[in-house]
Amino acid sequence: MKWPWQKTEQRSLENPQVNISNAEIINFLGLSGDTVSGESVTIETALGVPAVWAAVNFLSWTMAALPLHTYRKRDDNRERITGGLADVLGKSVSDDMTSFDWRKYSYEQMLTGGRAFTFIERNGRGEVINLHPLPPEFVKVRRSGGKKEYIYNENGRTHVYKAGEVIDLPFMLKSDLLSHRSPISSHKESIAKALAITKYGAKIFGNGGVPPFALVGPFQSREATDRAQSDLAAAIVKASKENRSVLPLPTGHEIKTLGADPEKMQMTEDQRFLIEEIARIYGLPPVFLQDLTHGTYNNTEQQDLNLVKHRLRSLVVQAESQLNLKLFGRNSDYFVEFSLDGLLRGDIKSRYEAYAKGIQNGFMEPNRARTMENWPKMDGLADDLFIQGASVPLDQQGVIQNETDENEAQE
Image (cartoon, rainbow, N blue to C red; front, side, top):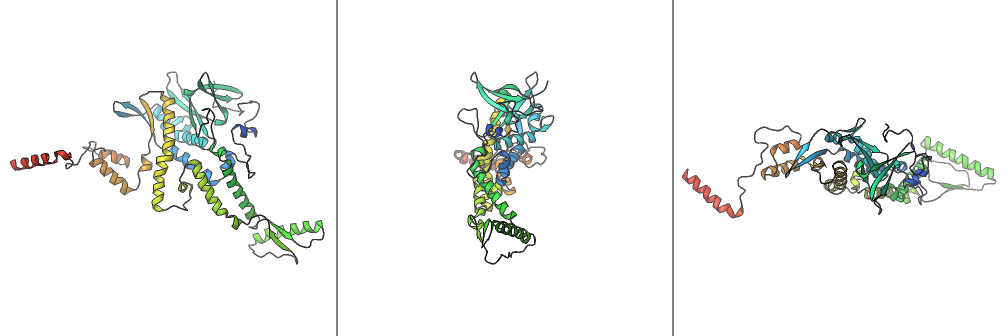
């Protein structure tokens, strides 16, 4: 039997005769390259914009690096589960893919094309044994009999999966709850502007740093005009290679700049603004796209907290909800959870103060604090909860103090 992820040929869903590399697949994925600037925007070209590249990689690397644990509810507590599914989720999802690689790939697909799919492979007992990511361009989502289905195409043949067999992570669903929006296609004009600015700057530097210009002079014939154009272009290239800033012109000729001057265009400011635009698209503080224009020591730390509280938290809740539903079903005692502790640890002074407060107020054991610092556990009472002896209820303070004084007097 050949599994659907073991494909040797790539065809589109709508027409198996059309190769997936055909230009028509751009429209199928909702990534039409038509923009006002004339730049063709696809996933590949968009990733050529450094800010898009940084945003996608930062979020996908971060989500892939978060510890993912499996638990079971035990009355009011929970028990950490090891082995089996816990190893699949935390170590390797299949024989040829680690958990880190699977999560990074999934978030790369979601943050570019707008969606990530993973097929859940179970054994005869219904236990999850492997997870296999499905290339989004080969998956179509439909509703049949009120139930959501995933249609996967393999060598012209289709495989129909029930909703419970596929982990589905969309960036944003449309109103039909089946199709999705891509952050790249939805903001293609902003990305196209970044591509156009980059290309314009590259052309200027490729021309020795000289912007487009017109050569004005007493040309006597078409041949003389063409010859002057070729000679001047060669002179510019030669001057650039020889690092010369002086360019001689024939008598009676002058140069007039065409279009906008790069300095007047303020390309640097435009590029900085586009970084902020792309940061908005992905919900990231600009500092995480290496833009420290408005960054200070204090507000950068606050942006760290903003990242975890708002952007990463939303991604974590989405992933946890989808995994718990598809892997365990509804109302299960088992659940998975990402750990954000490492991202919220802060500096050493803040951590130690937080540990001290937790231990002194009776809601953190000393060994738990040591574990969070990757220190070995201590024997004895380090697994117990402690409370400061002076902490007593306000209405009992006088009574307890009198009893203490009496006991001391009797001794």
